[in-house]
Image (cartoon, rainbow, N blue to C red; front, side, top):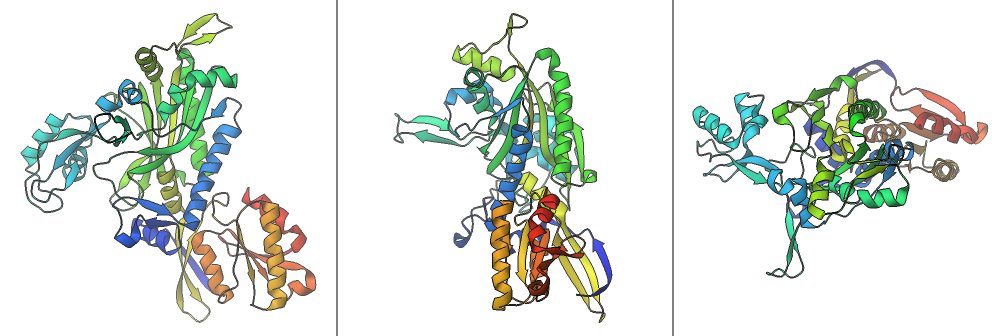
Length: 474
């Protein structure tokens, strides 16, 4: 469409992202035909590609391209003593309040923060939270009755039983984090991988948290996926390693295309630190609407807490022998942790844009475009014959097959509706390049490549299209 004016307007809202995600097959509500199951989500054809691209890029960046990293895929179910040793049975709690009238559940610290404007709510004990709520005589946010219970600790681990559901069955937990699998396999990793401190272990896997108040689309869910690293270092070198990983995490933020003005780093106060941490930083993202700044990633110095606890509980020696210094010690651990779902969500929010356009006839129009980093886009390119004519579709399908083989990535093919609508469809799902086979192609052996972000068009010989796309995708 010919344009005489284009105005880009930042327009991402959570409602628009949720609508786009379902309409275009990124994310569906879980168990949808049965009315859904609250805070469960399934990833559709485009969503699973975006999710896999995020995980693939993370693994390539932090495991494959670093000589000091190895990988692990630990199981979801572990011996229950793992969670006793790690402190999760005692410490993995959130403060819970109920409404006696409507039976709704709330995080007490969230009520203090969101309803009463108390910024350090997470550092307060349940008794302190109860006193503040009672003094404020706070009403239930759902039904409006002033019938909230006292705050109490609620353990967020899901549990299940191995074997018959009886006295003979063994109670186990669905892991609330992936880190412990690395710690309990630390000795085997040392023995089989010929690694030396400092080294790290990367893992991508599912974790499960019985959140009191999940929500905000896929921001806080019951079933989540973590991309996590445990980096083992000499105790005296842990501070320097912490700073190195802080820089590496900022590099990742840039790599996935987030606007750095939407991201900040917040240091935890001493009272806010987890039971295992001597220092923690949160990468926070400025979410739209009332959400505001919320946690995106975390970076923690876990010291030797986990190895020491597992050594004590299991009775197995987990010290590291430093041959050069002829000494034994428990390494300290730096933990950069990344959530797949939150990465997915922030990438979508940052990429979403609307352009208010006016055509030559003065008619207003809106172009919705998802400006995903090309390396993350579900489709890297789309092949579009100008018209559904055999002479064009034959060439287009041959080009489509060639690009899929030579690029070794996902390419789309679309010959339905007019070319303008097909461009808009690809813009909305984030495809960075569209290749149009037209009648001139039959004469000059070239195609028109349209750039998603600028809408600029360039003629490129069919034989050069793979190299052209490869350079720009990477």
